[in-house]
Length: 458
Figure (cartoon, rainbow, N blue to C red):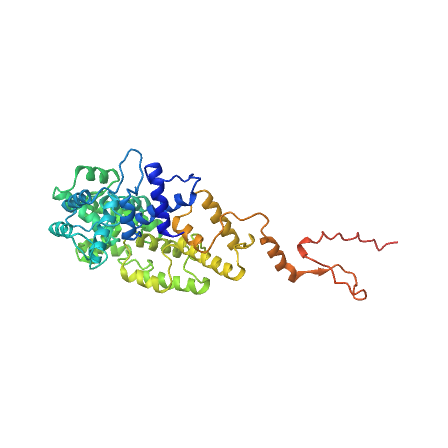
């Protein structure tokens, strides 16, 4: 059914019920509930067309439902007021689409740009937005992450690595540096300072490393580590000593390490450059070799041949998701067909197979013994539980997918027919009678009972 017809149905529903909140259990028109949910999902992902947004907004459609709260779409002037407050706090009007403090504001800002580009934005609204320095076109994609999101990334890093030393991560490292600077200048809120203190945040990492136990004590620990392990390659996760070793390398590289300390470290075979660290490009070459052998870049987490490669692949997806992967690295991975979202790509691959199956066989009766058949059954089960994403529902319904197959579907019969390549005769000679030879599928033959072996002795 077309979008316009669904719009008429939701208008009628509102006339009868006073709102657009169609329940998932609405028996009179269950498809309408799915459609309503789909519009909310498209709006949340910034994929809803502006003209459709305006049509739904015009009938009082509620985009986000929460108990005891008013509708999230509240009129242009109120959104404009929120945008002014955002600018006062952040210094610009570039509200990110994933702005967790107010997700609707990010969508509203994007809509204003779309309306302005089409020439549909009212002149008085254009003037108001210009007065606060609104940018109509963004020259480059702005990756703007709010404070709480960066804080959650730092918490996760601390959980994984045991410290808050994120100097090896460009964007998160810059954010950490900015927190230290803001704290020294008295511009960081007490609440933010408290949250950072709770996770053991280091406000002055360099000074802290010099204070803890003194240089001589740490050097003594390193000598003991060298005697026990035969090298000075202390892992970064090692409590305190790992950070201290990294700091010595950093000072040496900058030419700030005292000559007598350099001599002491040289005497125990200290490595100023960690040669055991595999570079990013070397891992990329390993991934290319993996793809040549397996046909994809989805290295399993338990890949015994190279477990470090599996960890590296997972880390690239995490860095990309959090905006920490450089543009050059993401392009290099794109060129070899790297999948940033393997689950989504796997679903699309199965959907393509199903489309081809439908074109070839004229139906969706895929035998369950095939992987595609298992996938089809899973889609029906997830749909029945109300957990299938609206965009996936739309794609499946677009090719005429049947959610409730009729009983007695000949999918197994079709599989049995395919087995007739391995049929056997019943062993009778029927050539003289002219009768057609009886053929029985192998998997339906009765078990063979062998006669007992007779003794050779008399």
